[in-house]
Length: 230
Figure 1: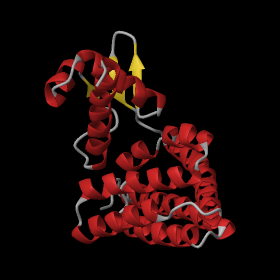
Figure 2: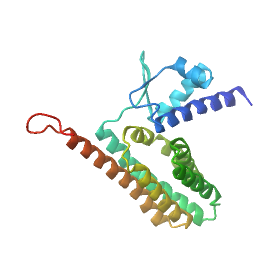
Figure 3: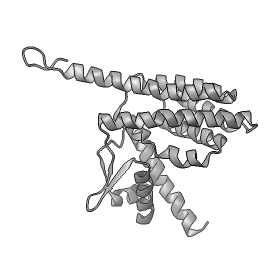
Figure 4: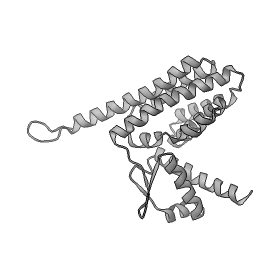
């Protein structure tokens, strides 16, 4: 293995570690990431940590500020909705492209294996495994799609931050149901149905988040005597 390969591998360990930390709520939006702590935590070089932070910054997960270091990005409600708008179109496009790949004769084995892993993680309630399997599912879709532009652009959507900030109680149930519907259409090679299922998935995520936000605002609204309602 060359020095470049080793650095890439080490930086990937940090990238996935931080993304898993977000998924498991061990890392939260607004949290500062200290380079020396990451070096110790992942047993990698400082250069590898910096490379990982640059990758995460390019994906919109981390903000890098001069003299302040790295911080997990925190999204306003407006920014959250903007991310979801982009994710809706991109997820539909990805599902459509993957379905076209299947229709053109590409192997469906990677997607079937990724879906089986996701179902297993969902059944056991392992959030770490579910987050890892969800990423594996999207990697399989990107592989089957074969679109270089989607492979370049899709990881830059800041959904990890959205999921870290907003965790409606119904979210995992919504995601699992939608992934099954989307993958069914992709595996059938039905591009139109896959596109619709991909977009519907993000629409359902948006609805769950807005319902949660509405409940939070209603619960915090002061009552007539000035006390906060529970």
